[in-house]
Amino acid sequence: MRDFPSCFGESGVQVADASCSSVAVSKASQNSVTCMYRCRLFDKSCLISIVWNKNLMGQCLSVEIDDTSHQFICKMDVKPSLFSKRRGSKCLELNSCQIEVFWDLSVAKFGSGPEPLESYYVGVVCRGEMVLLIGDLAEEAFKKTGATSSVSNAMLVAKREHIAGKRVFGTMVRFCDKGPVHDLKIECNTRGSDDPFLVIRVDAKTVMQVQHLRWKFRGNCTILVDEMPVEVFWDVHSWLFGSGVGSGVFMFHSSLSAEKLWSSPSVSDPSACSWSCSGSFKESKSKSLGFSLVLYAWKSE
Image 1 (tube, rainbow, N blue to C red):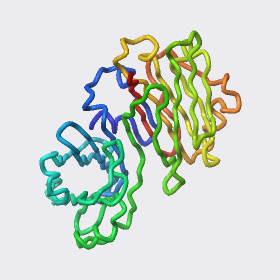
Image 2 (tube, helix red, strand yellow; image 1 turned 135 degrees about the horizontal axis):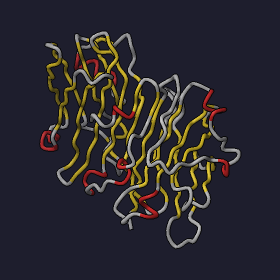
Image 3 (tube, rainbow, N blue to C red; image 1 turned 45 degrees about the vertical axis):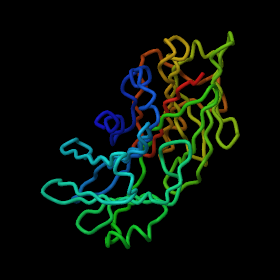
C-alpha cells in the first residue's frame, strides 16, 4: 500500500503518475475497494487502510497500518479460506505493542462489489482503545472486544475503488465526514462518436460536462457539492488512444478550504475547465487534507 498513501500527504493530494491509470491489471484485481482512515496510534497520526477484495475464492480482507512518514508498516490479511468462519480476530506486533484486529461478517450483506453494505464490523484495538471501527454493528464490536472508545475519532480521508461499466460508471460517496451520501455517476461516450464527451452527475443532477474529449482527455475542474468545492481530475487517455486494456481514472478531492473555489474554474462555465498534457495530475495546495475519492473505471464490452 505504499503507493496509495504517497498520493495523499498533509499538504494536499496527488495522483503521482499517469501509470496509475494506464497499467494493465488482471480482472481479479479490478474488483477491489480501499478505504483509508486517519487515526491516532501511539499518540501520533497514522493511516489505517481497509482493503476489500473479491476473487474466485471469495472475499478477502486486508488491514494495513502506516504512519504518514512511512517509518513503520504492518499488514494483516484475512485469506478467503478463513472467511468460512466469517468472524474472528488476529494480533499484530507493532513497536513492541500488540494491536488486535477484530471482524465479524457472519451476517454481512454484500452488493455486487467486494465491500460489505451492512450488518458487519471491523475493529482495530490498541491498548484497550478502539482506534478504528467501521460497520454498523458497533454495540456488538465493543461487547466482543471489551474496548473503550478512542478519544480521537478516526476519519475517512481517502477511498480507492475499481468500477466497471459500458458507458455509465457509478458509486456512492460521502464528500465530507458525516455528510450526506451521494449517488455519483460518470457517463463517458468514447466510441461511435466523432466528438466524445464526459458528463458527471451527483444525485442525477449534472454538475460537470466536458466536450471535445479527444482534446481534453486530461484535466481538472471544480464543482460544488453540499455548498463545498470539490476538485475533479480526470484522465481517459487509455480509453481514447490506448489498446483498450487500461482504465479511465477520476479523482474527487473535497476540502474545507474555500480558496479552491477561486483558484480553479467554476462548473458554471464547463468550457473553462483547464486541462493538461503533462501525464500527471497536479498537486493540490489545500491546507486541509479533506477527503479524496479515486475511481478506476474499466470499460466492459
